[in-house]
Length: 153
Image (cartoon, rainbow, N blue to C red):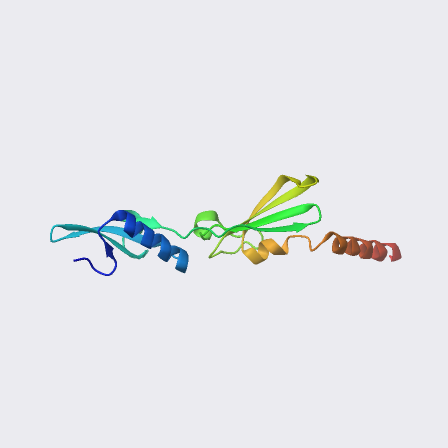
C-alpha cells in the first residue's frame, strides 16, 4: 500500500508534482523510495535543508505567459522567469535582490505590424515597467516643458 504522497508510477508522480508546482509557485521534489519490496515515488515540496536539490528530481513551476504592452512605435513583453536573483543576478534597474526575476524585451516598430528586437532587461516587474515611456504624447509634453524652461533662462 502506498502513502498519500506516494505514486507507484513515475509518470503519475511527475504529473502530480507539476500540478502542485504550478498551483503554489514552489519547487516540488520527486524522490524514489523503496520499502517492503515495493518501489514508489514520493512527491513533496523541495527543501534546501534536505538533499533534495542534489538527489531528487526537482519540478519547477512553469513561467507565466508573457504580457505585451505597445506604446506608439515601441512594444514591450514582460515574462516571469520563475526563478530568483540567485540564478539571474540582481535587478538591473534598482540593483536589489528579486524573489521573482522578470524579463522585459523591447521592440521597435519599423513597418506596420513588424518589429525589431532592441533591448532586454531583467529585474522586478515594477522596476521594469517604470523604465518604459508613459506614451509619446507625455514625452513630447515633457520635452516642450523643458524647452520652455530653458528658453526663459
